[in-house]
Image (cartoon, rainbow, N blue to C red):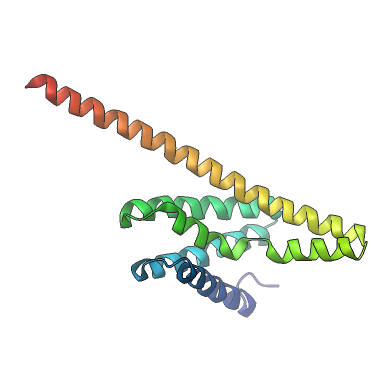
Length: 162
């Protein structure tokens, strides 16, 4: 199977449209829709690329979430909007809804081998998403704190000169 194919193209387009649809459900301002759609498209592309080259559910979702969270933080600063709107809509394409559904289905059917398989996949994606959010939030929090300290020191230094 080749890396780029028609199926991937369809998934990328539906990722962008799905992210845009959720942005509309969240009543996000229309000026953000293009960036939000782009976030969903690229987040899924990162997930697909890491999966294609051998990364498991956890690694692929972690990498994709790191992109979505970083993109969200940067867009929030550039567009003066909450980072969470970019993060949530960007993550929509990789949320393991289907895996969670099949986990419950196989549990109800008492098909434990398949239920365990789907549960591990669901858990891996969920942990990857959580880990990516935490890592990027910590990094941006530390950077933000350092910038705020420098700003305060500069302001206090200017006050001392006068």
